[in-house]
Length: 587
Image (cartoon, rainbow, N blue to C red; front, side):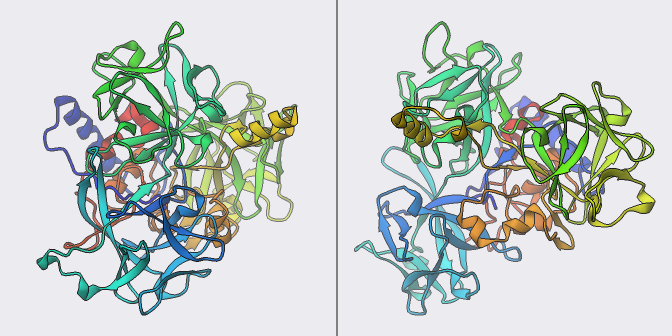
């Protein structure tokens, strides 16, 4: 799951606007306690999964790496061999497994403390506990949370020795009373929430060129305009902002003391840290501020470059929108079929996930939604006989509500109360009466669709080859949305054939986690049937269902207080009031 390594403390000195915002959040939390029907929020966030990170020794600034053979060593590099998935245990907050992203192998230890890897999850020697120890600062003033990593099977702490070897030392050798705390590790997160960064003043979007990494404001909403907001750690809620299409750990927004803004590949620098907060009164949007220099990110105008400035104004106002733009493929869980819309308005089921199978989920009044075909602009409707059809305009026949099923979603027509269904034998699409439900034939998942784009390496290869082939414009991999339960999680388990079931495959995870849901299997399973939308989910996360506001985090334990199973408090923390980022209108 998105594992939160930062534990965000509540700010005790709130401004009046902060207090009003907190009051709204508390009200939202109480309004969105578990219920059958989902709250259909205006936007669902686009969250990457599974959580990737670097494991860096606090004392030596070295990363744990794994080669093809599974050998463990340390390096100063920050490349794919140094990337690890953090996989939380569903029953034990803070208990995790580490899986190498490049090779799919699990970090393990022998009884005598030798660190190696294995290809299966079964052994207890692969289970570790993360404990937050302290916050430290480097020479540049950058703060980090340090964690101890404790092997539960052999009762030893993971450490990096002076000779750069990684091993596990016995618990008795760590005596905090004598000034010998557990060995410290920095968890450098690489995944986060994907957003477009848009200027409402210029009606353009921040873009990062695939080859030169040059920043500009573009009218497009493609992969180069998608940005990753990664939690920076510490107790301040700061983030690092990197360009999505350039990959994990690359092209972070960077600002110097003179206001110049560019990108860097430094994932831990202080000049790459930003704060995101509501814009001052009278402005509708957010302010993005350099933490090191206390300057606002500013749109370039009349040919001037992107920069930062000391005074807030129209050019420093930003809107953040989910990278999938609320576009989804709607999939039958048991049949693995998508709903499509043809040119003439015919509704059909298909194996495809192409343009005709993409639907825009639009918020309507009183918690209902409409589903609009992105290819043809038509609204999905249902009549009293169960037939599906499309219209140009939204009326009652085109309004739907979402409710949790056992392992997915029910999609229910407002006008008829009938349930969207995909026939078990013939894949026929229709709506059925509640009295004639066929079981899981009415269970659906919604799969986010990200912008089509071309990566930098593809562009370079095609330029070298002398042409830019249409075939190399590829659909971006799936990210995740914040609808708990939509991917096949429920109180009775993971639904077979669902997107959630695909998450259970170690092979799929090692291949990059292309299909995932918005958090760990464990956490989503625990609240899968709750029925919360974005606002309710964020409140639940801060109240303990998931630690942290935007699910970037694991329920890391405190070295002295035990597992943090209840979060910081029973009310949303200050940082949860400003998560998810695409939901800024409701902060």
